[in-house]
Amino acid sequence: MTESWWFLGPSVQAFVGSYIAPLVPKFRSENKAVAAEKESAALVTSAEQKPAQTIESEEEKKEKAKQLLQTQREKIIARVSVDNRTRALVKGLQKVTDVKLLTVRVEELSFHLLEFPETRGVAIKASVLPTLLRLRQAKDLPLQSAVREALAVVGYTDPVKGRGIRVLAIDGGGTRGLLALQTLNKLETLTGKRVHELFDYICGVSTGAILAFMLGIFQIPLEECEQMYRKLGTDVFKQNVIVGTVKMGWSHAFYDSEIWENILKERMGERSMIESARDPQCPKVSAVSTIVNRGLPLKAHVFRNYRLMPGTRSHYLGDCKHKMWQAIRASSAAPGYFQEFVLGKDLHQDGGLLINNPTALAIHECKNLWPNTPLQCVLSLGTGRYEEGGKNSATYTSLKTKLSHVISSATDTEEVHTMLDALLPQDTYFRFNPYMSEDIPLNESRIEKLNFLKSEAETYLERNEAKLKKAARVLGQEKGPIQRGAEWVKLKADMYEGLPFLSKL
Image (cartoon, rainbow, N blue to C red):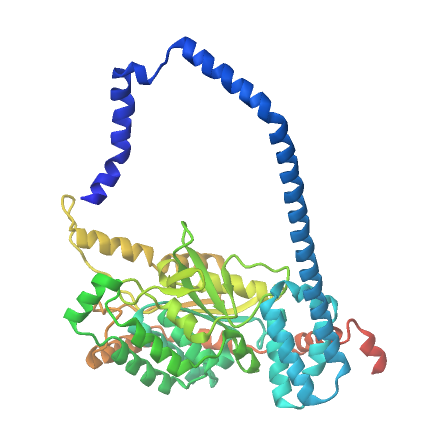
């Protein structure tokens, strides 16, 4: 009742203004003599008060200007202080020989640049990159790890492992991610290499993000990954229907989001995204979520385990400071399944709301990381598609069907595929997205249905064996001697700020 009265407010006001007021003219006009007298008195009062008000106004302006100047000075002093601290931290690395102290100072530099990312340009001018690249040659493993993280924080990126950039992008799709696992299993068999060795960049949305982290950051073998994935589905998607329906009423989430969070914390710990850069075998990895509280249009957020070089801007929001479990929790916060995830001032939901096929986003990020390197292979993995026959009725469609069609269109993955297939060079882009003979829900946890998914994937891959072998061949292309030589020269030039090292040979 209160809500309906609230919406009637403007109408009531309009009614009063349009109809009641003209009927009571004495409220609209006064006696001309009285009005003239009041106006004259107001002018006299204004003239008397004007000098005092002018003086007061000038004093206020001076005070405001003084406060503004003081604030600006404080900001300048703070910025100069932070910049000086940055230079001091970089110079501190150049004066120390003790390995343990060096490791501590490198970690201090990383922490400082994470807290004040705008000072990375100052650090680069102070020769932080040559300093860190030379320190990376040390034999001490903890120092090497700390240096690799510091280089990633600054924005430095090593050359790709293969002839060109090799990208893996995995769609969202709940427990149907088992389909993507089967494709990767075949590729590992064909190439003789594991997933984290095959790709330079791995990006995922929702369930795809879970797979990206398992395979890229934690480097779990595919067999174990499948077992964990099945158990994860059983642990998370077990919910009494009545309890789930009640929960939907007050939290808009059918499943227990707290249980999901605790599982993620237990499995991933408290490590931040950027800490994975300490591992020399770890590729660049990202997870995509959707920020829903910054107005329209909705905005994609990329949780990265890297930073771009100063001056390089991505089309997408994101950073490397958040914890890994937070990235997965945010990327998998599917409406109706889990509660939205609050991180700082932002409200995150499933990345699939906006970008359910992250392949184009992954390519964009890669071109920012390696701007002068061509694409070698882009592998895009879907989580299955089911084409419903449907009833062709021109007169009636149920509301449920309409909503289902709207959601399917919003989370469609094949439009991105069609665009990339037309734009990317031949024998560079490969998309595997099995057709399913049955519509399997995203929250499926029954063992027989998960086994059915696996068999559907195997059948699809048998039919597409030639395409799979071609993808394996492209992924396996190695660098030539000229490319290796050019990369060696560039590395030495970066280490010694030019080519003076040639005179030492």
